[in-house]
Length: 73
Image 1 (cartoon, rainbow, N blue to C red):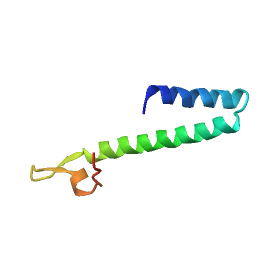
Image 2 (spheres, rainbow, N blue to C red):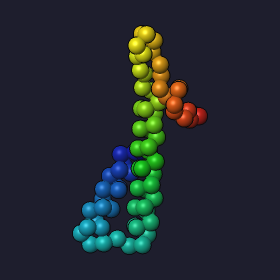
Image 3 (tube, rainbow, N blue to C red):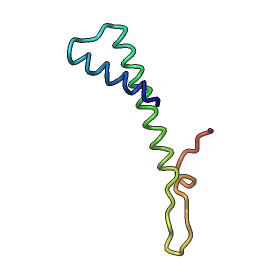
Image 4 (tube, rainbow, N blue to C red):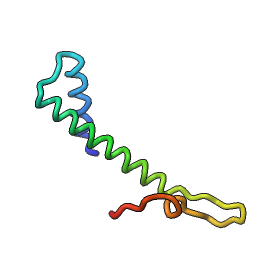
């Protein structure tokens, strides 16, 4: 997610606490939050899919290939 969008989320949060938001700003905030959450989930899934485990026999097993859902990039 772009830094400008994260900054906008923070600006809307500060404004919400200070003076409240208009309906348009509330909708914008909700959309930005959904996009942020989706971005965090994608990043976490990518990290989890790249975990390698060394088995007792010395072989290396990628847990993302074994258990994870591969996404088309």
